[in-house]
Image 1: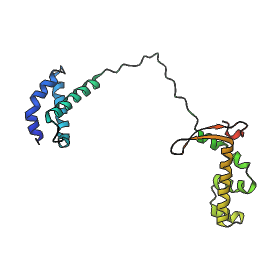
Image 2: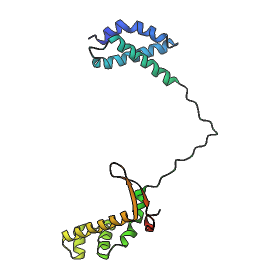
Image 3: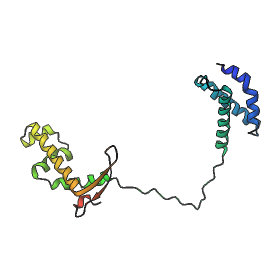
Image 4: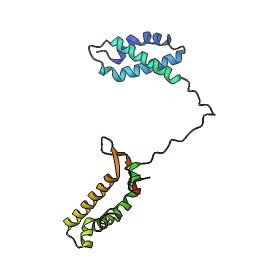
Length: 184
């Protein structure tokens, strides 16, 4: 395998001429030649033995020239008459559903409503809930879980949900004669 210095000695003059035939400015050609050799230097160890060194070097050179012309492509300014319209803001389906949850919780049976209001909306821990309601900790946990399940079922009875592959809700449609909480 050749070193970078040997590659420079063998190819620099022919590559400069190759670049000059495609780029009219000699200073730009010299800059491109340096850019090519930086790429060669940093990637020479990735060259497979079966791949032709000359073909590989010319491919790097051609791609560098293409990149040069892409960078120089003039950007056309947008006409001033073109007005900018703001992107439409899509409502977040989870936020819309969440805004109606409290009123749905209000429709649950008293013991489940109380458990969910205290834990989910007031931040009371389930251990504290057990003390407040005179229940065992496992009884309080069961009541919260059962309340969540009733709320979940009420949501599914009220609306049709669409989820992405990861289970995140992406859309919902209220069912006919649905509760007003889901209609936003």
